[in-house]
Length: 141
Length: 187
Image 1 (tube, rainbow over the protein chains, first blue to last red):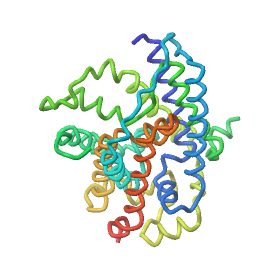
Image 2: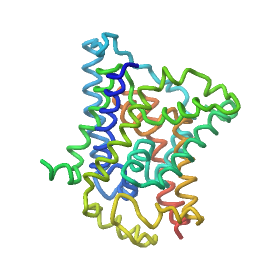
Image 3: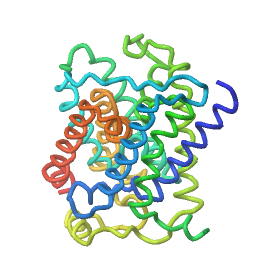
């Protein structure tokens, strides 16, 4: 990767982390509020993000747009027949999301905000990812 | 203008900006957005025990994403430290009442200082929230093939049925934790 490539992804990531904090998506309180259906806040954010995403992905696909390097943009389809994987794996993720009040992006944005204790959930998430790799052949998908 | 950087952003401003991450990454790099893949790349970089799932060229697959993640930390520093909102979050009153009943006292900042503190690591509650919570997020994200960004934002943006099923799973687990398990943990 060229230096300009690193800079590009660094800047997009910085914008992402900044908006995650400014929108309070990183807040444990907001996640508790979301799962209690007490506010439109998180639903509005996810809903509008998805609407903007759907519209832009549809435009990109229909116009067969190319990326900055001139390569055709292709989005690999996910295998929807692995229902167990998405329901069981998704539910396990959901248990952790509500418990910790943060998903992977916010864990890192919170660390950046000066909350050094987030090192612990990040290390635990790495251990979880590693454990999945270890058990992958033994659990249903 | 500077006020806008310090203030919290309303959902109708933040939502569309987060959604734009998907086309920006596709158009500028042909990349599909997802944060939890970085956890896999980090495991692949170490790969103790030579596990097959982590046997791939993580450098060519993950360099862009790891760089993006470094940016996320930097963005968190700017948004949560340099331009931190000094006011408490404007939470729904019913959520505050619920959480107070569970013993949460401090509503300043982004997370409750009652839970997110180094000295909480010595307690059962602290270990459960910080260690078990993180573990379930890491394990579940890989099992489900993605996290909130990969499924709820990227996957749904591409109208992938798999991602819709995964997001339903996220909420099944999240609701069980919120209404049945968390009251026991904090009880």
